[in-house]
Length: 104
Image 1 (cartoon, rainbow, N blue to C red):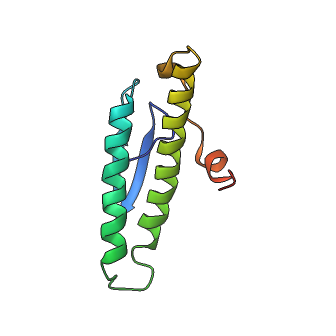
Image 2: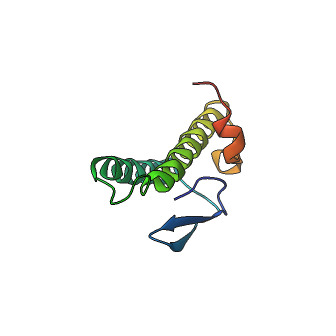
């Protein structure tokens, strides 16, 4: 799943099929955390599963890493908005390029 923005469509390539996920306009912190847990579980499973061909899981792992970064960023933005008295539902998720450009 993707946290690019709350009305995002994420196309994920898995086994040569494209799956689309849509998101409601409003996402709660708990929904984001559930999504993060699901993606972390999938990431761990992919890392433990031997790929039939070199790099077979690489694309999916790359997509998961980006999506996880976006979800964590969105969750941090929501928490910061709440802390400063702003509406967390008005937080705009950041594009992958921006989130991936952050220093670790």
